[in-house]
Structures are given as C-alpha cells and as structure tokens.
Length: 304
Image (cartoon, rainbow, N blue to C red; front, side, top):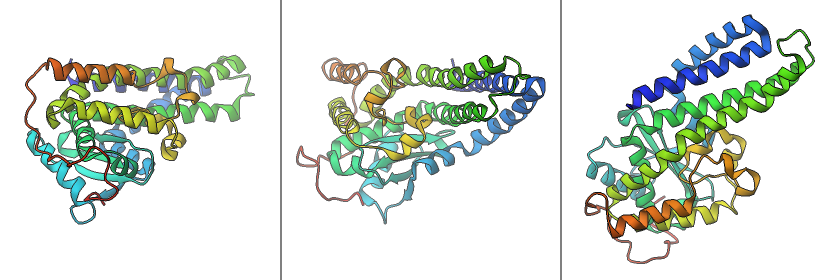
C-alpha cells in the first residue's frame, strides 16, 4: 500500500472520529461543524503540521555556523542515501532523543535534543540521524505529523466536552459525554500505536543501512531508553500526542500503560539490529561518518 493511500485512509478515519465527537457534543449541527473544522485541519495539517510540531517541542533551526558538526553529519548521510538534505533543528532538553517531520523528502526536517548530542558518541548520533532520515525516505513523516496534529485536537475536544457535560439534551446525555472523554483520546492513541510500531522496525533497518553499522543504532537505542526513564522531556509531557514521533518514547514508562505504547519494545529492536550485523538483509554500505576515536560521548565537540 502506497504512502499516499495510507495517508488518505488515516485522514479519513480521523475525520470520521472527529465528526463523531462533534455529533456527541452538538448533534447533527455539531457533526457538520466538526466536518468543516476537520476539512480545514486536513488542509492546514498537510501544509503546516511540521511547523506546529517543531513549535510544540521548542526546536530551533541550526546551520553550519551554529552547529557545524551536526549539520554536516546530516548532510553527509543524506547525500550518501541519495536524498534531499533536510533542515536541521536542535531541541534544548537534557533527555537524549530525536524525531523527523515534514510532508515529503523535499520538505523535511530532523531534530535532535541537546541531550542526544552531549550523551552519545558521534557514531551513535549518526545512527540516530540515519534512522530519522529513513523515516523521511519511507515517507513516514507525513503520517506521523498528521497523526500528532489530529490526536492533539481530538484530546482537546474531549477535554472541551467536560465543560458541557450537564447538557441532557445532547445525544447520549451524560453517558455519551463520559464515553467521549474516555474513548476519544484512547481511539487516537490506538491509531498512533498502529502506525508507529511497524514503521520503527523498518526505519531501524534502513537507518542501519544508511549509517553503515547497525550496532551504532543498537547502542544508541539502549542509551536513549535508559536516560529517557529518568530525564523529563517537558515539551513531550505537555503534548503527549507527539510522543510517537520520537525515536524512543519520551514519556516516562511508569506513567503510561505499555499496552498502548506507540513504540515497539526496545530490546526487540536492538535484537533485530544485532541480527542484521550477523546476517544483513541487504549489504551495508560504508559509512560516510568518520569514527569518533573513542567509545565515550565527547564532553564538547563540533555539535553546537
């Protein structure tokens, strides 16, 4: 199934869910209003949702003057993969993590946290950036970004229902309102989960091929998960609908039911990457990223 078909199906499903919520809140008039809003959101999300997500995370654009090492690394990896060079952003948070966004490879961006640049080796950072480039090449980013936008809107609409919960004339009454508040965010989370888990394995595989060494990515995933459990990512905590976009779940594991995690088990991802090194599915190309010369993360370097 092509990426465009998947995107159309996703937008149709989320639009239908949005209309259903509108009907519960305001009957047939509410459904019509929700349809109009959803139509506008679909249009705006396609063209501007990447900017909204970058804004939610506080990401700042960088260039070769402000972050020469990171930008040049991303450019080398993109060139080696035969891709357009994405814009590069940095998020000021100590939790190591990263994500990609954009409607297509020609309008894409990758974002890394300052914690990622400080706490991982150069090879590990390169592997993480290669993973994000894989999402761009696989055209996952449009689906990921649209889902984040709609999931946030659906959750906001469910919270809005709280202020009108006493309206007995509304279809479903109080029971319908409670169902709306509970099931709408859950439905959005299930859509995110269905989209996210399978694409992460494929991005791991393609990312390992782009950087040339699957063990670099395996080591990076292991470190990021360990740090993410103990370091807050305040932007993601405030906007949990964007959590599925990061390479590792940025939300603390103890606060969220793993049954509804948007990310596959990290140990399984690492095992798949280690198996690639033993018996690669496709020949791994020689990496364009030079070795850092050491296994520990540099305290300073060409990042910032």
